[in-house]
Amino acid sequence: MKINYKIFAVVALSFLCSCDSKSQNKLDVTKSVETGKPNSVDLKPAFSGQTRIAAVKSKTEYKTEVLNSSLGKPWGIAQLPDGRFLVTEKSGFVNLVAADGKTNKKIQGFPKVDASGQGGLLDVAVDPDFQNNKMIFWSFSEPFEKGNLTSVAKGKLSADESKIENPQVIFRATPSYDGKLHYGSRIVFDKDGNLFVSTGERSDKVTRPLAQDLTTYLGKIVRITKDGKPASGNPFLNNKDAKPEIYSYGHRNVQGLAIDPSTGELWNSEFGPRGGDEINLIKPAKNYGWPTITYGIEYSGDNIGKHITQKEGMEQPVYYWDPVISPSGITFYTGSIDEWKNNLFIACLSGEHIDRIVIKDNKVVGEERLLEDDGERFRDVLDAKDGSLYAITDSGKLYKISKK
Figure 1 (cartoon, rainbow, N blue to C red):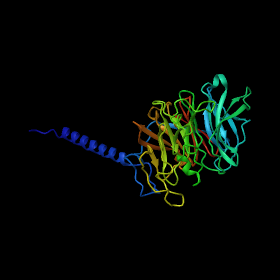
Figure 2: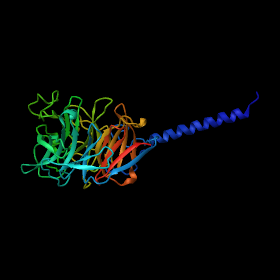
Figure 3: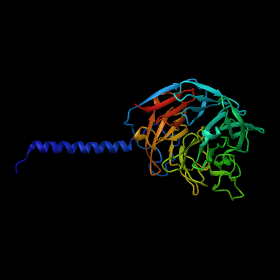
Figure 4: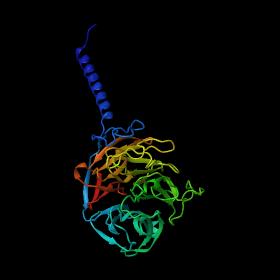
């Protein structure tokens, strides 16, 4: 048989390239974006892909712009129907920022806040019927009784947009506590116009167990009406041993809440201790484990409780980080970069980046870290009406991330 060596060489080369490509793909699957040593080396994930998933890299070219650098100490960002932004300032007012991000003015008239530590004027949300009623909602650390607590209030934006009229506190996450940490405090509207609100367990060892106590609001996600009443369909409405506003419990410090627009399901981001930052798919009446189970340890290096990560009746995080990234605000992307659509974006504080999480069938399948070189503590992210992603930082900057 006569062999055509040119054809043989082409086929052989194609085979080798194919093998090399498969090998490269295999390496990509096993390579994690996280390379740091975990704090809790003896705590293992409950399932494959629960941590240190494969790194992914955006193929689409995008640009980042810093639109504003004078926002003080911002915490939450929301967008008005006309494209302008509301950005909270921890000391007790809201910045009304132009749609191009260049200019801002103060909105005042908010109730007094306790701005010490992690407290202050925190998240903000725009009423779905804002065009008709001009109402906004916000969360804040309110001085109350002998301490402070996470509260939710609402008020009407005045005609000249300089102040909030008739502010009313509609919900208080009792009991109050004389502390400066773990207020939680994200707000998101559901499809029925009710509010999901997260609270923290206030950090101290004396308050931690209250995350498991259904007679308190600490360490919970609650679901309330615009008037602060328990929302219809809440899981504990008919339970005399539980607060009727509670939707889920066993949380440490939830600073991120977002509804997946493709499924309508609620997700959170949650601070772990030293290790064990989490994202969770939130289901009604479910117990997310803190402080009984965790993938972290104390900052001192001591174990937490029985040093376990799994227990019957307690939910596993969809994904966790060790070492931590300090996840704050989150959003699902619906903008103009196709490969990012339905990805979860997380503002990271100590991680000093924006985390892109690729989710498929409620499992994390890829992770990418954006803006790692900027050295900024990212506090919140927003999926905006113009197809761009916006973010605020603890240093007072407003970022815009958009397709080139």
